[in-house]
Structures are given as C-alpha cells and as structure tokens.
Amino acid sequence: MPELNAASLQAALSRIRSQGIKACRTGLIGAADAVVKQARTNATNGSHAWGTPTPARPGAGPAVISGTLKNSITREAVVRNPVGWTTKVGLQPGRTPPYGNHPTESSKYGLYLETGLRNGATYPFLGPAAKMAGIQANVTFSQAFAVTSWTTDTTD
Image (tube, rainbow, N blue to C red; front, side):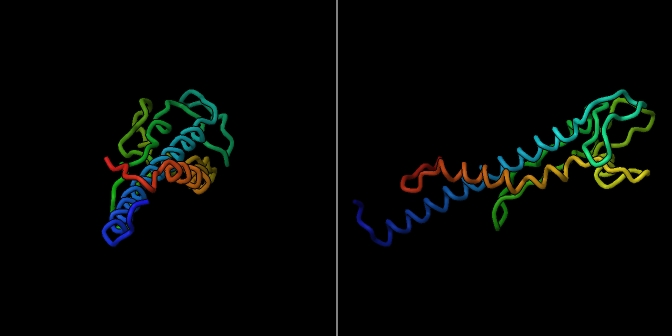
C-alpha cells in the first residue's frame, strides 16, 4: 500500500478532479447528442410535398417536407467555463428550404412550430426532446463516471 502523505494525497485529489472534469464533459456530450437525436426523430412525423396538407397532428412533431428543419437541429461545441461545461442544442440559423419564393429560415419556422402557428396549432419537437434530457443525462453521466479509474492516472 502506498504511503499516505500530503504530497500523495494532493496528487490523488488532483487526479480525481481531472478525471471528474473529463467525465462531466463526456456525460454532457452524450446527453446533448441524445437530445439532438430525439428532436430529429420528433421532427419526422410523416412527410408530405410542399403546398400539400400535413399528415402531422397538432401537439405532435411536424412532418418532413424537405428535411431542412430536421437537419438544422444540432448542438454547439462543448466548452469549458469557470463553473463547468456548457453547450446548447437548437436550430442552426441561416438554413432555408429549397422551395418557395421567400423561404423562412428553419430556426424561425421551428420557433413557430414550437410556440404556435397563426392558427394556434403547435407541432413541438425540441421541447419534448429537452424534457427527456434529465433522464438521458442520468444515463450518460452514470456511464461516463463508471468508466473512470479513480485510483490510477489516466490523463492524456
């Protein structure tokens, strides 16, 4: 058994901190990617051609016309800040569908679908995916910390 002194304790705590930081980042990436995947699934509630009635029902996710909305769902890079890690999941601005004379950006159209169209109907896809984030975070963080070796140095 190694000798326990101030230096060895400091080294062990530093190693635990470093590995915990890496596990947190890994867990956040897994949780955010799961939200993206679920939101893309939610935004694929049937399909139809542009200008035809949607097969999607209000309260459920929208149907696919061109796939622009679904393909614009993404997450930002995971970045370190003074209190931990952060990322955002949402719609990329500037993406427009290949149809129509003045197409609406998918980020604006997505907001309309989530919050309500002119007729008041909602077709939420991102909100329901975000609600499952707590469940998914529990799984991904548990997995990230389970593979961490707390007693040996695994720093890169």
